[in-house]
Amino acid sequence: MQAGNDQLTSQRWQPLFGAEDAQIFPLIRKIDVISSNSYLIATGDVLILIDPGGLPEQAETLAKVIQTCREEKDRPVFVILTHAHVDHFLGVQ
Image (cartoon, rainbow, N blue to C red):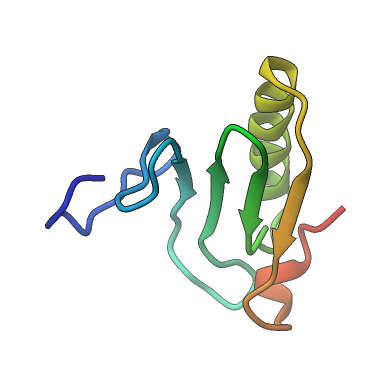
């Protein structure tokens, strides 16, 4: 994502504006009562998952991306839940 562009492309790695050497993998979907958008941020040292969502297929997609990242370079995964609604955390495993 570049300066001045507030659009993220779902399910594609892209630079994270303002965070040198960080990439973001957004999983953007139509928000409903059982799932929300999810974001995976990769730096050289850590993976940060924000709101894993509430649907099994969402969790599966994120798990595959995380596994691929950790195969390239093993690093810890931190999970951030923005709040305690099932649409944001049910995918935590």
